[in-house]
Image 1: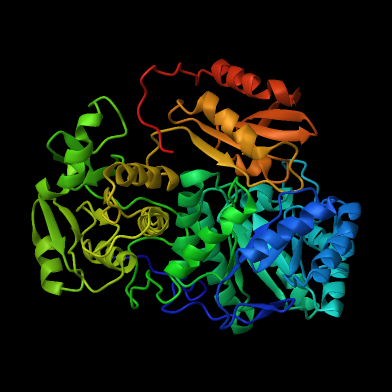
Image 2: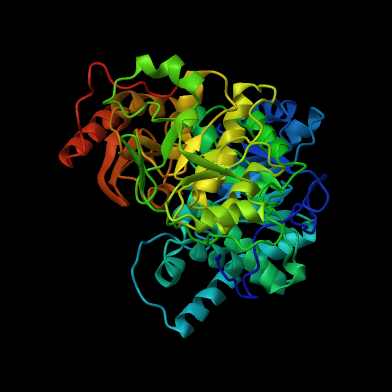
Length: 594
């Protein structure tokens, strides 16, 4: 039962928030006993000083504690001085972070004016060539020496000025060197960051933190867990803080759900010292979401199982191997997609609105299920279930004095894997109702965390009173966790000063044209920085190539170049048709989540 982990791979779960050293970003401390810090990023042009000052003030007013600004060129980096001075003259001392990709010289200029520099190990010293080659150990060592020569000046300058740094790996932009040795994997993401961290430590610079961001929550969760385990194995003085974020989460409910799954899962395990929620919306809308998420797990690491061995490998996704059973006409468990269970009250309220042919509908009624409810702390109840010859649907008994995530992890660890598991978003269904914005984030974080652990053959959502919203949220959580695709899936970046078109308007146009394509995944990227990598599992991509021009991708391969922006959505639909993935929209299609 459970996965043994070697001494070199400590468990990435904590009973209280992981204890780190403090990294100082201006006057804001990150890590240690400080609260989890909330930050965001400007979407306006870095050369528009007035807009940057105005938007930074707006973010600070809604509780943003750190503001990031892209600095794609030396010219942009130089203008950070004017932005900083404009803010300070107005009495705003929010720390500024320069976001750097590709240009070490821009980083050196930016470090003169800001409190922190974010570098991406995948492209700080490498231009992406998508070259396929094998590196000998000697060639690889030579590459590390080359990186050191480019990175060391920035490290020394930051140390002299007391500037912080984020070594921020993105799943979408690993170097060719890392890709060829480790692949586009969580291991590759961690190794990419550690290469740079070792250089910083060799120069006695420690005022840095890490991030491991991806658009796929399962990849992101695995990468952060692997990073934290590797840091623990390296030694006690590798206790650097962690920045959490899901890249290209999208907008609306979908963006919030995906962010809650990725960020919330890790916060629930005690990982994370600062967060950024990346929404394809105005940046001020990110802050309330981030604050709600950090507040959910501020007092309680809900994933802690008190030393119990887990039933899953925390570093790679595999679905729990339950047996298939049939209840009425619905099969669940085994290789079946996770099913959506509703209470009778919710079923009776919405059932007449859905035909049997539609995907978006209640499938099973909780009160009618032949279900075994177990307190996983009760050894006799667990033993009785395991001694049964028949396979039965099991769940955690209501009222158990455990957090949801820990309770279901404990159940999965102690119950034989053949028994399918029904997940619940609460074990106390009669609690006072919460606003939908809170319900959405809490249910997504708790159910999504378990689904990304591979646990769960059905889900029951009871914290939302509105039947339609509850049903929609259950399906959207399954989609965002990547375990059941029932509609078009979008990967959309949140915009920044590098963006080459209006992301919010473009995303809306693309959704209007393609939202009926169930099971098709479309990536919408404002520039090339994360584009091809974050589209790793997307079917089609729409990427800003130059001002007013768009490149279209099939998978990771660019197939159409420099298309005028006004024609690009139509050309995207033509591309989808040419690859046999297009269907015409039905006149009366299934209800689509808002």
